[in-house]
Length: 247
Image (cartoon, rainbow, N blue to C red; front, side, top):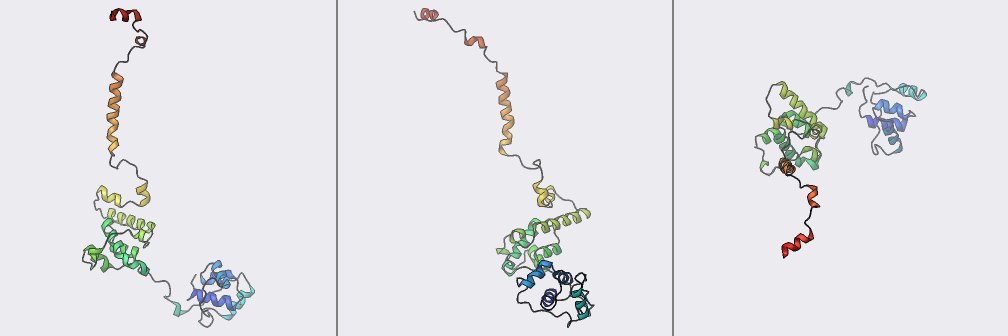
C-alpha cells in the first residue's frame, strides 16, 4: 500500500483534527498502532507540525468523514503526481559523525582480511565510496601510514550478519567463476557460526599432545616387568639364622 508523503506529520494532523481510530491512522500512514497512540499521548513526534492531507491532495473530507462513521473502513490515498518518486532512495549507508573517522580503518580491515569482497559490497557495508576503497587498496590514501585495521562490526558500522552475508555472497561468486582457493582462504570465507562450529581436526596440535605416546610407552615397559611373588613377602629368614650369621 502506498504511503502518504510526510507520513508522521500526516498522522499528527489526523490525530489532532479527526476522530479516526489509531488503527485507521496507522494503516493509512504506514505506522504502528502504538506509535499513533504515542503521538496522541505526546510521547512520539513531539514538536512535529501536522501536515494537512486534504490541502495537499492526499485525502478528501468525504473520505475522512466516512471513515469516522465506520471504524472498519480504511482510508484510501488519492493519487498525487507530486508524491511520485518520494520512496526511500537507495544509497550509501549513513554513518554517524562520531564514527566517520574510524571508517577508513574498517575499510582497511575488510581489504586485508576479506580481499574477496567487491568494492560495491564494502561501500554498502560501511557507507563509503569506491575511490576511497581503491586508495586504501593501493595504499595511496593520504592517511595510510596512521591507519590500523579495525573490525567494522566492533565499530558498529555494520552487523555481523550483514558481514557474513556479504562474505558468503563473495565466496559463491568466486566459486562460480572457478577461482582456486587455499585452505586459509576457505576458512576466511566461513561465517562466524560455521567457524565456531568446526571440529578440531584442522587445528595445530598442542605441546601436550606429543606426550601421549611417551606415556603409553612407559606404561608398556612397566607392564612387561615381572611382579614379585606374593609368597616371597612372607618367607622371611628366621631370627636364629640371623644370630648364627652374626656369630
